[in-house]
Image (cartoon, rainbow, N blue to C red):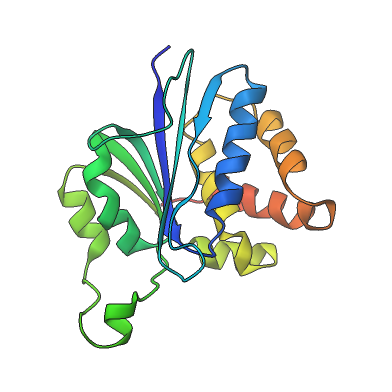
Length: 192
């Protein structure tokens, strides 16, 4: 079995740590060797954040180099574009259509790029764009957008739905479990 490389990217406070923990829990329970990197970036300040998840029969390092990611799961459009050089040729980008202006845009020093999804597709990346924020809101909380994206990611893996649900139970506090299960389901069933 070849090693699969996933990058989870976003902005601090969007729940990338929970998403990577959920994925790691699921993969370990499936008997795979998993390496999850620590969160890198300015997670406390709304800056760019990235986590690497690698799994397979035997994985030696948690690091993903440029051109090696099979999947980039992005909680924000500009972050997907920022990390695109790490994607393999014909790799897949699962992204939330959410836009969070970085500080240079807020201060007027830069403009937020137009038509980002089209620009990402033009690189040859396979793009699965989802309005994760809207789906999370429908589930009960905008904070569940990360779980919506995990639901979307689940459609690309041949793993039983029950295994994903068990991982959710293990990673989510009981009082938020139903909301997150709904968010996962909405992401899994979203059509792009």
